[in-house]
Length: 305
Image (cartoon, rainbow, N blue to C red; front, side, top):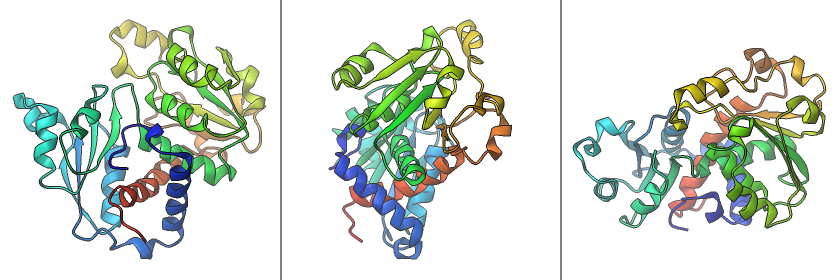
């Protein structure tokens, strides 16, 4: 595999290998501390990010490599009108691997056709966010010991949520997965996700606007924020942004081993009082994101341990 554009670029066997490597990194960090010495990662972020960009940078540093790049398009030559493909082709002369985020769907894919170094899609608009999905899968595996036979609830913005779409795509390849989609009618799961993934593979799912009714059946609850940056109409955003807020009271009927996840950043869709609940896993996701990105860098650079 040369690049990672979408979670479907990875087979389930490759995902399992990445999870195994990440778990080994967690247990044996000293084994990996100099493995990418003299290797350079370029982080090209044309859209703001905290966790994804910094976790990529931390991942490369902990592997013994170094990092170059930019964190906003304003600090790159794209502000002068340079094309994305020209920017990436230029940077490929300076780095061994590139992590790229862009607000336009397909931009990392277009860039990958103009470079000889591996490119990782670190999020392209509302389309895909494969490394967040890998962090989610590592978190689920570490919490549940499996990636099969569970009921997963997604709540909030299911229309624009690229993390939601990617995780559905990934989990749907494992046995015994069922979904509960909880959202206002304006933010329901897109028809193409239902047609191309769920219906095509005869996967059971429920669409509802009621969180409380289905809470007792969930093994995973994946909360999302309503994303202001994906709305063209500010009034619609304000009307929908507080549609679902997870509180301690709403968890009263949930399973004792429920895993509560969120790709972050959080606005107010999860009460801070939930943070102290042992079922809260969203900050574990952040930490797991670094480990799985370390494993991915090693895979794409073809570095064997």
